[in-house]
Image (tube, rainbow, N blue to C red; front, side):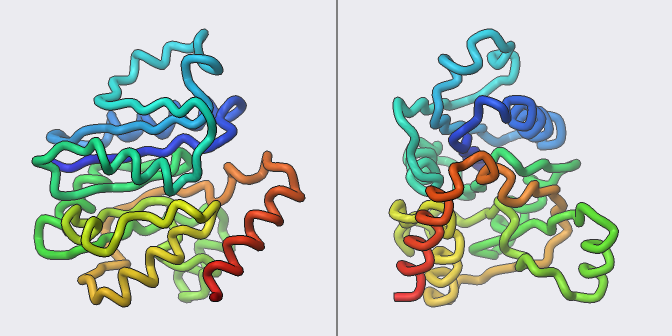
Length: 219
């Protein structure tokens, strides 16, 4: 048994097709048993009321009245994960899985790893070539998706909710400092539309949040 915790970014109004595709891929390509936990930050009930959202079975849903950070949402999801789930898989809604991606990540946790990351499928020919040559600008861990043993996650202190966009980097530092057993290059494939959720943000707000995150990371 494992828990998939999906955060729906703010804003999601124009991204509903992407969110649907993400959810459908999870349901189509993931074998049971697992639970799907969705944390929504611009309530589905308001912005998607005319869409057949309820046709996708969501096991547990948290609807925040106002937008929370990605990492606050992740923590909310982890708090309602089933007691018999010992693997938490955190995902953004701009991540698309393929056949048994999430099952493979869970397998690594069940076989003794504390943390497991998928491999992002390159989006362009240049990225493909860069991948082959080991020149990818984005680290293998920057995938918008991570599996972690629940006990290890609680032991190192959950996500730091103060971050806007760089919380993964801070989490990686704590994973390293704690000496957790981690596997980065796996056979679990995803497509990650990296940072697409931030494109609709006001430029000044985006720069302000990035500045705050970078200052906090570099303290």
